[in-house]
Length: 437
Image 1 (cartoon, rainbow, N blue to C red):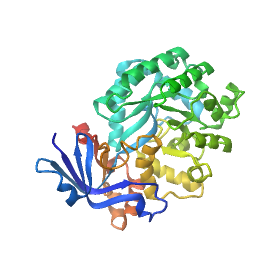
Image 2: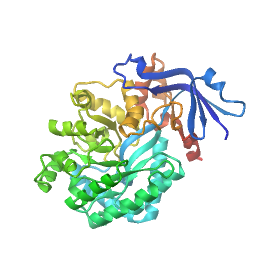
Image 3: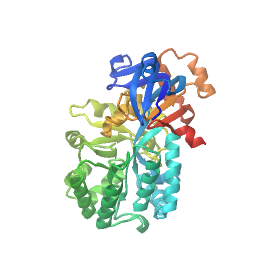
Image 4: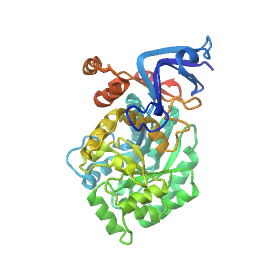
């Protein structure tokens, strides 16, 4: 098979960058090369060295002076909510009942699901995101549509059919048994097919009865290698309602703990208002708290305490995500820009290397897929984003005074959006160019 040799300024992370000068935490090549074959990176480093391995037949693509990074990863996103984004004026529970649940009833129609799945993954690629952890709707057909579209594009995506059997309109409810049966069928059909991964997905404790939570726990026990994703401690009214529904619980997290849903592949969206006991439970189990800054700001839910969660005696694993449609855009650049502001409100700062670590290797580690994606390491899947820090007139003007890589990254994070994404490679194939055609 023909190889592809990419040339550009390459940046990939080895570890969390403690400071802006922690050069040991990343690998940067001013004139870098990536040799791709069969969807994987088979050589990476200085272009002059990588080029020697390419051979005459290799297709050469020169992206200089742009940056080549691992494709962005979005750890929590609702693909059925594309027509909910930018809905005015409600907090979480009212927002769900007024906008989200009525919209999700449409996904009983398989054609609607396939159309939105196609448009959703188009939008992800346009913004440089090559992997998501996605919530589908309650309908089995919505997950089938998502996985079919993802598989056609050869994307590595994690997704699951939402399980919810109460406190929502009839059109978005299943039953404990049907939620279990549909999930089992989807796992058998899609998990491990190509690059597809399945996530057991009880929406949250409010919309799942104790019987359904038991079924979710059974699925986790029967499929211990799978992800589990849900929501936790996003909003004060949500927390109070959960305590009413599960009066025996010590706290919100205890509900999930009781049903066996904590673990290293368990992804908990939001986690804003955690007690110390809850934070300890997440840490002890290796569970992941997913930071959704644009959504938390838009719905007025609160400020995620990112740096404290990292630094506590029992640190919590953290991922970052857009959350769309509670979130306000599809871009991980915009997400980390808002994340920077949330963290600043808590009296801390996130340096630009830390932001780009989070969008790439950090999220890959949190999703337990770092052996496949999130870096430019040899042997990993060739999911790559090409970024142009001069993509707009305002960015070009600011770049005239940018003197360091850190300044360029912070400019991309602060002013960048889909226009800064020049190309995206999914398993070595140019995906943004193909999409435009």
